[in-house]
Length: 619
Image (cartoon, rainbow, N blue to C red; front, side, top):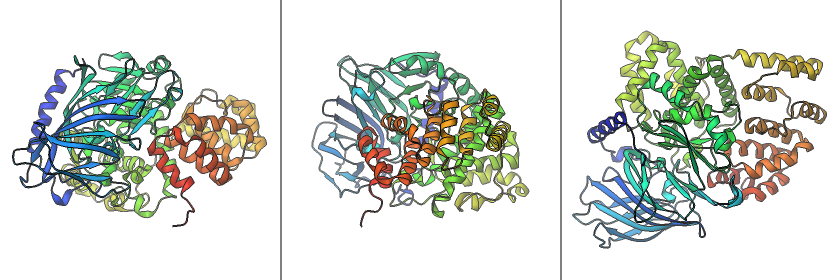
């Protein structure tokens, strides 16, 4: 049985007090991406009971929802999408009238349940469908071991409603329990603080800290565990576990570093689950159980900034959460900033400087492709899929804004502010306006002269990067630029090989970015022969090289690129690779995508369909 230590138990008790004292949502603050009406009737606890059917790619069971009824006359309104609702009852089994609203392609259908006067628990009996976007059911051939099927969920941003009928908004927090029945030989895991076998079959899980719905996660497959510290473990398929445990050996050091900076870790366990490569993201910060892509298993810990990032979400995002997806930068901007501070503590200032400089380079490139309204930190996404806001703006412009505050007020003072922000709002959901009020009262008002130097309006609601954006330069990347400039002048590959001895992944990424686009085939071939880019096992370097190869029509890399696209489902890699292929040969890019499409998660498919299948269609 998994449990949390005494310290975290005290934090949970504090959270319960905070939740009781916190103001409930109002009609004016409803989430535009949820049909729920939590200001009238809000769900505070979920009891989930599901049986997984891998043959039919469905889950069937019930969700019992415990309510707080602010308006005794109001119905319960839940978010659903692509769910087969069979019946709705109260806790005693009496039928409750319900209706499903009109289907919206983004929001799904509202499930409205009429409540009796005494009703405090509503039980929804349902099954998922094959269209459930949060669930990816993998055949054995799509896993590392190749012998067992696999299932994982991805709820962020608004996909939890495709596998649980729920108030699917980050502004609604709830505790939950679950019983999951899986086929023999498969291990279910959830983003839970406790787990134990159920005597009647299946596994029971519990999360007694209130969390938003997008942080309820499930995985099931042929999984084994490897402890790496008293509170950390790695889960993976047997074929992957050794490499994963070695790669993530610094996890406990990362937790300690963040605790020293920003306060106690509140969640007890911090485990990492390495998923099959079709996982659409680098990682997902599910409490107690980070989901991670195997593409970060480089063998040299050069890509573990992703683990630092997902760990940092235990404070920014999980502890204090964006109230709506318009406020997404509050999750990601803080998390990138914390990630970079963790890396600095563990691996030194130069490593952090490389990560920051590369991130800002990528941000400036992405800003050039975005509409002005999408370049702001605080977004207006009503009527759009909240995934549209998951750009480098939220992550890297958000982190740059925090670095600007650090620059103005000094690191010690700003660290106290950030620590105080987390301590003041544990297990709460925050809007941008609420954060700005806290910022004003607890930092800006302390020194109005410094506050006057901050271009706050442009940072939060303006496009692009303000003129006062901090500039971070890496000596290691400057050395790469010098080496690449020398090679460009004399084409001396041996001199470049000598200069690049010992380069980290981040330096190789800078070197590839230095090359012209398109790059002449003979130059590509010479570099490839000397440095083995096409055959690299480092997914970040492979993606950068394949993107250049596609743009340059470098034929020797095309079979390896095809194989990469057929194996990896991480949207960060798929989008630029298919974009490069599309620019070079739209017909071939579309055919390649259609061949691999069934292996990708719905999150990636939505992005790629819009780019490769829907562009140019008649309205």
